[in-house]
Length: 440
Figure 1 (cartoon, rainbow, N blue to C red):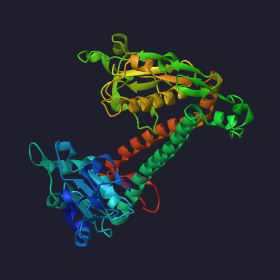
Figure 2 (figure 1 turned 90 degrees about the vertical axis):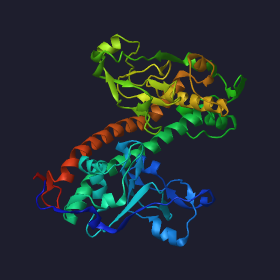
Figure 3 (figure 1 turned 180 degrees about the horizontal axis):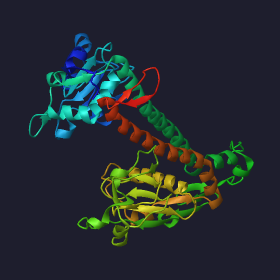
């Protein structure tokens, strides 16, 4: 630990005392100012603009209970001890906002304390352990603002706080940039699939004697007219096929959990908890892994790169594209397209299938997908050369997403390695005007 860091109570770094948020009854809900709730603090690191519930406050209440950029919000209660004290930082908000009664607001004196440093501090093993030590209660664990204020902490000089926060923040900022880029790239790929294979825009353009807005060799792959089918009008020459007939369907399985030799191996084993966000597309890792013996002694199989996985039971309709060879459990299907060597067409066709199944449910419970379900959905199947052309067009988008996911994972691993060392002073900043580091 850095001997020159000065001990102090955390409360001495605050510009105003910590404060609990507000609760008001139903007559005050649904109008007024946005309110940040505990669920958001659990799920994001930085509170930013999004659609939120509204709460009617008086001007005096808002002045007292506003959240501002740089404020730290701590979860005051939790049903599990590990959740209490979870911390998020408020970013720039376009509207004045407040916060819920099960949160604690901490506003720091920025002449003494860098908010981002202390956000990372309470996300580090040291800070998290301190917060958990405050937890009290049985069925519901709680902490209080005075408890947080009374924590004894070692305080680096403000410029060192800022430099440490900058180092850690730069890694997170690059990951956030990757996330936003991935959202854009995935939306472009999805929009192209919808334009070509759902809305048939190039065919409509040619049928109406308009330029389809693409190179002639590509435009020539699309017909110039439509024909009737059981799906309605579809591009002339395209075939109506059952979805199940366009893919090879692969089942999953679970090795016996009682046999330790089947688990903790080097083969990723997918379950729905590993499903990526839609914009991420690829699954690059899994929470659990199995051994080759586990594969050999169960019904699971190793899926090649480019396989689409769809969750069929439990949380239904989550999809992922396999980035590295992996197995999966029996609540999922693996789908290998019979056309489209890279699997991109099948991935987006599966995404469209899920949308149609959800629409068909009409509000009823959408709780399972079976092979009969996959056989009961029809699609207008384009020629193989058009599928290949689509995969060639979206390939660079999805490849960039693939690369950025691995980059972000490496950045997160580096941050998680540096975080406890920088926050504890084990690694010191030699010169705050440079990026050199030395071990204390």
